[in-house]
Every structure is written in structure tokens, then in C-alpha cells.
Image (tube, rainbow, N blue to C red; front, side, top):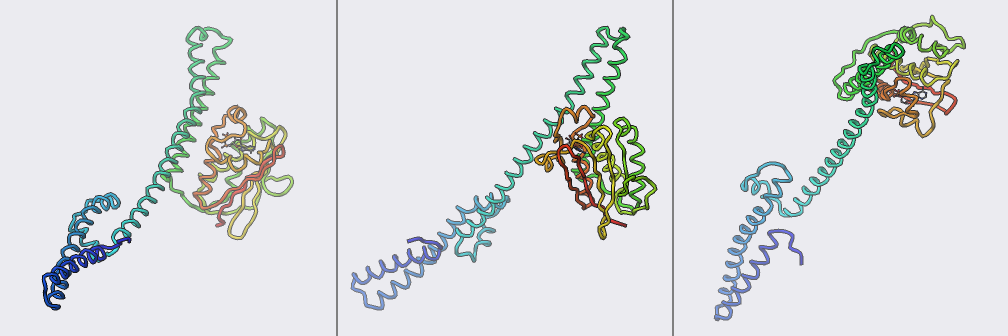
Length: 347
Ligand code: ADP
């Protein structure tokens, strides 16, 4: 038999005691009413005592468990009060312990995930920084060991050291930006502006890069794709939206083919504008498509580094788009080119 409540335990103890008392008085030759009185009196007294003693005993045993589950000090009297009307105390605490166990299990899983993410992140950052730092060290050592006086290498090595330092600066700036975006420190400064104008400004700054690879940058849907284009007003953070264009257009050049093209077009979708940045470049394999927005994920590491890529550009773009409550998608085919599309809210 399973005794589940203090009351039923007290009931059994007092029934046995009452029966014994009645038995003794019967053996002693007591009248029927004496036997009955002994039964009732002993039952009542033993029931009250055992209920009190058992309750105190259970509370004494449960107190440390309650303190752990609720992470606070609990006085015995407080616990007595809390459990005063609960008959199935053990079932109650079982429910509490299960909830506590579930909460702790989730918390441990979350902490383990964070730990793994932190290790990976620190490892990636160290790996990114290592190459340019060692390069700078190598060039400077060679210059100090006599290279400075050798006109065939001194300028060239200084220029290479400068390139590595530029790369370090890019990494640090991107890391700074991504950590600010992720920690939510940066607040968006929403305003109404013409997105066509922003695209024009960004293209102007990247024209030299594009020309280097004979890549034509077109805007709008017409085949020629040139300005002027009718203004398109959106509500967004101007600075960050221009950063999105810089990152996407730079990628379209870095991973674009010689004599190719990049097209920035706009699709009107009710209260949204869908912005597309499409290139005719190397494209991205199907398996890589879902991963290119991850920090430090590259489909072609050497090509990315060669172009001065930090592996953080698309992660930054995704953060900015999502901070605006919008979405970004990618369509791409290896060898045919890529199209990044993101939405913005019309003004
Ligand atoms: P990176 O600094 O390496 O360019 P990004 O985060 O901007 O880093 O891009 C991540 C990776 O996605 C790149 O290394 C490249 O492999 C791929 N990628 C990004 N944009 C394009 C594109 N337009 N065409 C082909 N591959 C691209």
C-alpha cells in the first residue's frame, strides 16, 4: 500500500493504536462503552499527535530541497504556513523539482552554446588577425635587417606592410561594428530619405574599384540603367542603409567577373520597396547559400582574403536589415551570379 498523505499515515497509526486500546480494555473485561470510549479517545489523541509530528518531520526534510529549488532561505514556520493546506506535499514538490530541473537543463544548454560560440568567435578573430600581424612583423624585420638600404625592396615592403595594416583596420572596424550591432548599443536613427540618391553616392565612391575589373554598375530596370531615376522615399537609418549598399556592391565587384555587371534595382511592393543587388559573378553554391550570412563564413577563403575581405560584410548587412525589422534573401547559382534582395519600408 502506498501512503501518499500525512493524513492517511496518521489515520493508519491512530487506527492501530485505537484498536490496541480497545483490545486491551476488552481483555481487561471492560463494558462495551468503555471499549468504545478507549477506541475513540486513543484514536483522536494519537491522530492529532502523529499528524503534528509527521507534518513537522516532512517539513524538516523538505526544507533544504525547497531552499534549493526556490534559491532563497526559507524559515520553517514560513514553509509550514505555505504547506499548511497542501495534503499531497510530496507530489507538489515533485512538480516544483521537475520545473526547476527543466529550467536548469535549458540554462545549462544555453550557457554551453554561449561558451562554444565564444570560443569559436575568439578563435576566428585570432585567426583573422594573425596573418596581417605576422606579415607586418616580417616586412619590418627584413627592413631593419638591412632591407631599408636596399632600394629594390624598401618601398615595396613598406607598401606591403601598409596593406596589411589596412587589412587589420578593416577587421577591427568590422568587428567593432558587428559587436555594437549584436549588443544592441547602436540605435537606429530613422528618417525619410531618397534611396536612389544614396545608391548614387555609394556608386561614386566605388567607381574606381569597379573600373579596375571593367565592371559596369547599372541602376534601375532599364537595360542601360543610368541616372537620373525618379526618387524613391523610404524610412530607415540612412548611414546604415548606405553601409548595406557598400558591402553588397563591394562584394559584387570582388566576386564579379572581369567585364561583368552589377545591377541595383527596386521593386515596388505595397508598403515596401524590395531592393535587389545582382551581379554576373562567380555565384554561390546551393549548400553555401544559407551560410554566407554567418560571421567569417567564406566560400573561397583565399579569394576573399586576396580582396581584403574580412568575412564579416554579409553578417553586418543581415544585422542591419534585421534591426530595421526587414528581411534579406539570396538567390545564386554557381558560375552565373548572385542576387541579394532586401526590403525597406516606403515613406
Ligand atoms: P568577405 O569579406 O569574405 O567578402 P562577406 O561576409 O561579405 O565576407 O561574404 C561572405 C562570403 O560570401 C564571401 O567570402 C564569399 O565567399 C561569399 N560572397 C559574398 N558576396 C558574394 C557575391 N556577390 N558573389 C559570390 N560570392 C559572394
